[in-house]
Length: 199
Figure (cartoon, rainbow, N blue to C red):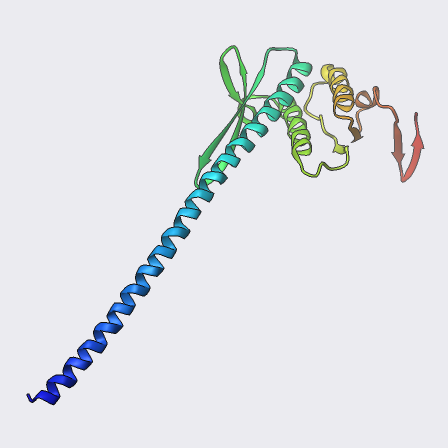
């Protein structure tokens, strides 16, 4: 190998080395940029987790308060609502249980349909109360308390009256049950397409 060939080879190697150095510099800059971005994402995750915890607590308090009030006013026993948020399958799920004398029962599995109807009303009202902007204070209920025993319907009326005053909300109830209309401010009857004002 002569001197010109060695010089040419050295120039090629030197060129490759410069390309490699530039590539290393570019990779380091990209790594630094990604490192900064990762740090920002990690900070954002912490903020999101904090906001989620605050939101869960707000929802928990609203649910427990409203469900406890509703169930106790109808059934008169010392049932207390307990709400727990759990992470399952990368999703947040909420468990709603009723506790009496330290024993917790799942609303859907261990309580009667009447309790489920009352809890469902409380859930609707909580969603309404937490919505931003707050929707109009009107809630339409279609046959809402089918499973509540007839002997407790007067307590349901009292609860609706209390909630209407406390939340400044109007309830429009569609029902075949005359007991549910006893406390209503206004009653309309619809029969064969004709509307009649009862009061």
